[in-house]
Image (cartoon, rainbow, N blue to C red):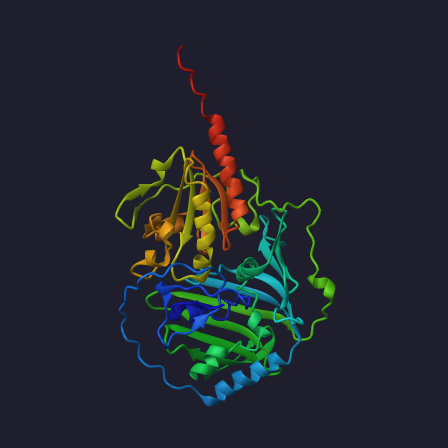
Length: 447
C-alpha cells in the first residue's frame, strides 16, 4: 500500500514506516504529494477526497552534491545486508522533541529473518525500567510472517493481529524494529539523493565505523549513519529534523549486532500464556504503574482540565462534560499512525452517539493550516485545535494517544499507538454501566 506523507515527516520516518504489501491504497487528497514528493508505506483505509489548501514555505537553499565515494559505501553496505538471511541486535532508541511525539524512546532485543513469503519473521522484546530501576521484560512482538502476536507481560495481555492490524502493530515497534535491514532498501533515500559525505570515523559498541552524513534535499532532515569498517553493516543512525514542523532528534544504536544468529522456527511460535487475557486491559486504578504506562497519566488519576476551541470556534471545556464518558484522541494530520487510527476512532464514536458520551480529537504538534481536511466528515466536528499544551499535560509524548475519562473526571483508560477497539470499548462500556447503575430509578407517576 502507499500512503502519501509530507516530505519532512517521510524523510525522517521513512526508515521506520514499513507496512505489509498487498493492502488497499488510501486516497488522501489532504496529503496529496507533488511530483517531487516521495511516498511511504502505511496501512489504513481510504478517506473521502478533501480539498487541499495550499501552503507557502520559504525556499530552502539547495543541497550541494555529495561525495560519490560516500554513496558507493552506502551501496556496498546495502549489498552486505542483502546477503544476510537473518540479523539480531539490541536496539537502543532515544527520541527527543518532535521525534518523541511519533516514536517514543525504547530499548529491546530484535531478531529478523527472511521467510519463504514476502513477509519477514520478527521477534522483538522491549525492556522497560521497573520502579526499582531495573530493566525488565515488559512486552514482546512476534510475527511468523502472517500473524502478529502482541504480549504485554505487565498487564498479562495477549493479542493476535492479521492484515492491516498486523502492520499497525509492527508500526508501533519501528523505533527499534528496522525491517529494511533485510528488505534491501535501508539507504534507499540517501543513495537516490546523492548528497552523502564522509564525516570522519568513530567507535560504536567497540567497533570502528565510518560516519556518513546525508542531508535530505527537500526537507529539513539530516541523516547520519555509522557503518562498521570490518563488515560494512550499520551500527548507529541519527536523524535530526528542523523547520516548520518543529525540532527533533532520534538516535538508534544497533548494539551487539549478530549478522548470523542461530534462528530456529520455534523462535516465532506463539501462544497465549496461561492466565493472560485477550479481552483488553482492565479498567480501574493500578497499584503500580506498568513500565510501559509510566509515560502516561496513571489510571485512576484526575484528568487535567482544559479548554479548547473547535473548528467553528465553539469553546469546549472538560469540566463542562461532567456526567459523560469522554473519549480523547491526541492526533496530528501529518503522522501516519494518526491517520491510520481514524477508522477505529470513527467506529468508537459512532457506537456511542446516543449515550451519555462525548468524543474529541485534540489536534497537537500540528504544522498544517487546516488539519480538519484530513478528517472524514463524521469526525471533523469533533476536532479541537491548538492542543499542544493539553497533550503535554496528558503526557502524550507519542501520537496518537487515547484516553477515556470517567463522568467524574478520572482517567479510566490510556493507550498509545494503535487503537484497539475492543479494549477502549470495554472501558467505555464499563463506565456507562456504572453511570446507569448510579442513576436513581424514575418515580412512578401518581394514579
